[in-house]
Amino acid sequence: MNAADTAFILICAALVMLMTPGLALFYGGLVRAKNVLSTTMHSFVLVGVASVVWAIIGYTLAFGPDVAGVIGGLDHLFLKGVGMEPSEAAKTIPHLAFMVFQCMFAVITPALISGAYAERISFRAMLLFSVLWLVLVYAPMAHWVWGGGWMFKMGALDFAGGAVVHMSSAAAALAAAHVLGRREGYGREPFVPHNLPMTVLGAGILWFGWFGFNAGSALAANGLAAMAFVTTHLATAAGVMGWLAVEWMHSGKPTTLGAASGAVAGLVAITPAAGFVEPMPAMIIGFGGGMLCYGGVLMKKVFKYDDALDVVGVHGVGGTWGALATGLFASEAVNGVNGLFYGNPGQLWTQFLSVVATWLFCYLMSRGIFHAVDALMGLRVTVDAERAGLDVSEHNERAYEQ
Figure 1 (cartoon, rainbow, N blue to C red):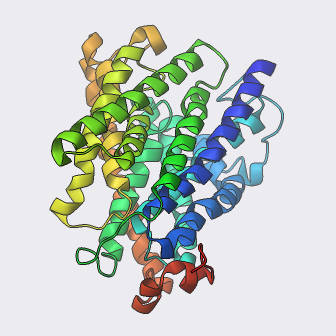
Figure 2: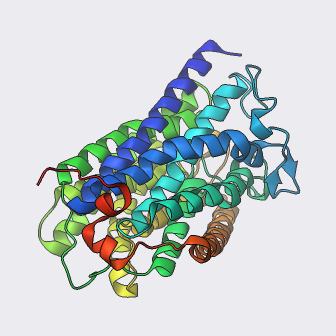
């Protein structure tokens, strides 16, 4: 084992952990004041809940011995056999270090979904859905892509979670919008973010933590980690510019929320490509992500679904673009695989197949879980509770003195 690699991955795991509280701030600032605590709670509580689920069963389903390319075996149930020895996936770091790094990905992914159902889901339904989703959707996706499953064997490239994290959460978010329906008063009343400085702070924490997310996915303190760090930063910077350019032309004003959203769009877009592309293509990916995700946010007005905090528009569109762009810009000089622009058109087709499979599987499974939870205990709070705000009706708290 290598001490530098171990230290690096432990630091990266801590950075990724910080992303979920950062997401809580990002989402919390975007909702109305009466729902800020409930929205923040959705993300924060999953640091606890998802970690426990991951340790008990999620990790073994994702990274246990491959079973028919579909799921991991139960060899690591309750973290059996996960100790201080190296793992098969990362031979220079302790198995525990790899497990806890991957745990932080499992924490933030269901938290991303919460942006779609904010301001109207009951807390107990949210908890049950998240547990079931981690076991039935996230763990299989992680196994398919990173644990030796069929997408890995097919040659699909996803360095840090374009499919596993972003498209999967966006597909679940779309299912949530379809099953739960619109918020009370949506389309008739103003739904204005109550604290944009909080959102910008959250975006900054996400940007900071994302270096652990992407660079850490090299699983070693090496040149590939440095490349992923640089491509992540440059793509994010370009994402800010891409979003603001389109927003400025479309609405006449560049906004602070647009800059924060553009940063997240750039981060999402580069995630699958970070360890496969060079810096200049990374900026193209980020700039394109900013522009495309701005358009993606406008889709909900066209298709009339209520994705409260634009999970589909940012993580769905950005993750899809990033996965396809990996098939365009991947360079053998970075990580041994070429894309279309480097003479390998087959990689783009492989990426396309992985995108279609991810959206179909994650949407259909998520919708089924939502319907099951709804039948068991009901998904939405009552109309009166929604009007009063979930902070009071679900948690008996108020964020601000009145």
